[in-house]
Length: 141
Length: 313
Image 1 (cartoon, each protein chain N blue to C red):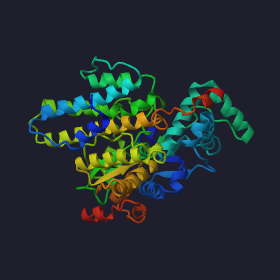
Image 2 (cartoon, one colour):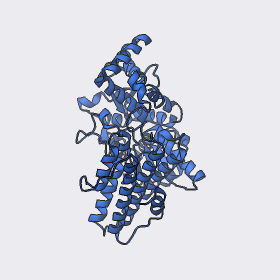
Image 3 (cartoon, rainbow over the protein chains, first blue to last red):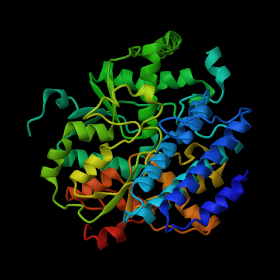
Image 4 (spheres, rainbow over the protein chains, first blue to last red):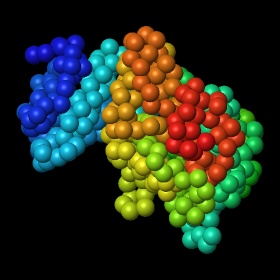
């Protein structure tokens, strides 16, 4: 199990590899690990199921259950899956190095968002969930 | 230009600039008005408008926020007889849409809004009286890509743009029932209206996967480091995608990107070069308006150099 700091360090030192498929597999595994930490912090066991062919998307769905603001990282997860597919389908593309760099930045964004949310629970709540922080206010109005 | 009947209502709209456009987003206000004038689209500013409730009121009492947003729509509908309210700020746009949704679906919201409206002495806003749109909808539906293209005098050709929509323009999905309706409608997962308009103006949109990613905006004061890191990652992704500039469509997003770009350099020692411009500033340049008229000099992020490099200014 890697800490967020160790994952961040690995992402910061990431350099495109000659074998794009192994790079994308590693980046996808790091993204899944980030979501696993979030789910474990909620007291749950991370799912081993897949959604649309990706465990990452099933993990995101599990992590977002009952927490609408967690959807702020839904598109980031979908973009990670998309970049994985690009690299898997066309490893010889002239864009392979750029796509690897972008996938690493996407995983970094996921890490920053979830890392931030684990410290400040309300991250994303003002904007993405349209949900008040003081729920009791809405119930007593 | 001949417009389909459904689009004529977007050519003259009630304009709700909101607080930010009178302050840090002043350049967005002036560029929106200048572009509207150049395109023959009319804006009637909502009379005696008030704050939409922003983030602060929502967190104290969300129904008061619903009331505040409803008052803006009530003035537009009942005093100005407007069909459409245009809000260029994502926060205002989001709050008006949320109020519309709450009033259509929640009886207790209707009761609170009716009670405060009567006390304040104005007509209670009824769901459906006006349609709230964003500045992107206004130009997209009011003039369209073809109409815009026909008016371009200074093509943005050669300028690579990453379009950043932020989070409030598309989330939560349920308050935007008109989106995700197939061809011609906006997408909440991959918005494209800004891309469409800037492409019509000649720009080259880069593939930018963080176009709706969280910038930590609402926590910018309470947790500045998280916000700075999130913004820095957005800026780096734009640079990795090859962008010269990031186009924005919200004063809060724009200011957040600008301020955290400066903070990332000062606090983290991480410098990025990509510049920020409001999409209305870019459209204005394409329409032949001067950068000064569009308030480009008011931006913290100085984009004049890149505009000169591309022979756009």
